[in-house]
Image (cartoon, rainbow, N blue to C red; front, side, top):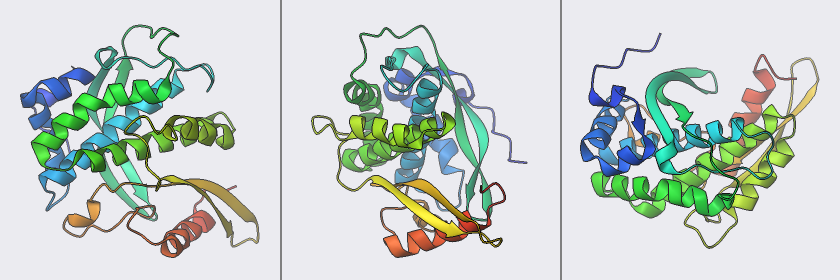
Length: 249
């Protein structure tokens, strides 16, 4: 079982806007993330916090949408968050991580439908606040947001039985050069593996354009899809995992 979070102001549900506007709340969240892994510095805490918040918020928005076309994107004031525990699975390793319960308050109107602009507006104040609080550059933080959006879109497509549609949604959002979400290094790639029984399995993965800095913690390493990892070692790790995971079809 994951450890219990200590009592702190961050255990009270907060609006997305409060993380950027209230330095005490943001500092409390950064502190709790800093306690997650030994040797985590403030820049890493900021990267992990932003990646987790962004992934969960976008996932919640997409889960609540009737389909992947014409999604209405909420304002930051309409998004409420609370810290929770989840399990991060990387290969054969399971690690307790901080994640978030997300509630969308209100009903975003269909007029707010420019996804790239809305996502940039949603995250902009938090990116600026985290850059100021941690010293991690805004450009690096935006890359983390982009990675989270890409993964959330891919997972939304998978849940609907159409990973290709999820990837198309991500590209439609993230290929917009007019927002800070754009970078040339993120993407999707397919891995093929052969199961011990001879079956061939394939799956799409998201290639990161940013880095959560987990490798800087005590005993940490680059994630399998980290932008710092070469594609050959990345694919080998994922191929081995895909070939041996129990739920592979």
